[in-house]
Amino acid sequence: MLTLKTQDSAHLKILQSFQLWLRHSCLVLMMAMTILLSLHLPAMAANSTADQNRSLALQYAKEGWGTKPAWEKTWDKLLSPKIIFHFNSFAQPIVGLAENKEFNKSLFEGFPDIRQRIEDVVVDGNNVVYRHTIEGTNTGIFLGTPATGKSVKVNGFTQLKISNGKITEMWYECNLLEVMQQIGLIPRST
Image (cartoon, rainbow, N blue to C red):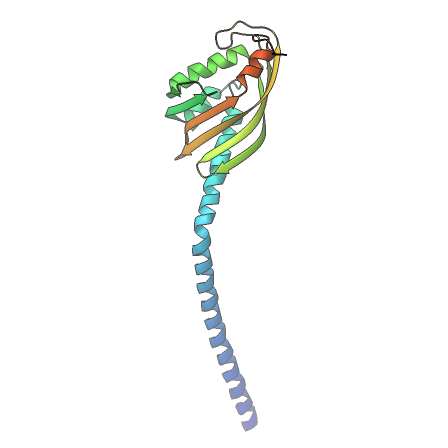
């Protein structure tokens, strides 16, 4: 019986030592995890912001496209009231939500069936750029020119600057000369 108590006592000491080691190991592991998380949280937050900006940009591209029935509501939701729009390197940007809505309406009057296909999306912080292909038929007045009934297909880029969940500035570039040539307003040089 005495031997058993000694063995029990030895087992108890081993168990106590193991428990102490386990507690110490858990503390060390928790400290290591805390350090690792603190190092990765800024990157995780940046990824979260990038993901949010990408999502907002794609929502704008899909739901804010001028042929969509509720595009104006999408613009109200996603664009800053002081939005600055740089269209095809025009000398002056279009400033303000109401002004941009009016300009957008005029563009889509010229091509009421125009479709946009997103090809690529790149996110860098608060900037999102997407490359797209647009196709449609010129059946209305476009930039002051009468309808030609001809179709157009051209590639372009849109860059959006996003701040606090709103698009504050955007750039749109496509080969406007190519558009004018495809709809027959400007002859192709040979």
